[in-house]
Length: 116
Length: 115
Image (cartoon, rainbow over all chains, first blue to last red):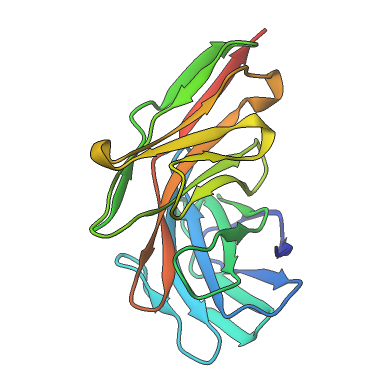
């Protein structure tokens, strides 16, 4: 299994500012994912952040808005840039220990972001 | 493209009653299926998973799920619900994107338990 720590756990931010969310894993993992969970909604994948390559963004998400860093096999950051109230969501970091479909994903506790 | 549907947005059951949460998926190949639970203010915890083999899988906390290929379903069941089971439940299918293996989630079912 994997233990994932996300910081901050929650924040209230002013519109127009940026917030960087950190994800720390207790073991080296190849595959890391960032999800967004809007209020009352399910999880939507923002991007896949594999070490050694540029992050791959899903439709509707762009690097300028959600820049991601993956400096090593245990750490990643997601920045929510130029925030608006529509960015208020829970942002979750997820990892897979193996790069195959038939393995489970582990999730952090999430970062609850409120933009005012 | 893969998709997951959870037809029931909210379900309320009495404590001690049985529970079934529905999940239907659409996926072109053999699906890898998961059920996760999210308690208020918490992250996601894996309840159980299906990869292959026995179509009835057992999970944690007394949950089980049955994979029915003919119905494209993977319903979650529990014979006797406890108040602590109140949470949001997500069904997911493992799938590929351009960069690797991701999860596609259903919309979730919020379970409420009456005393």
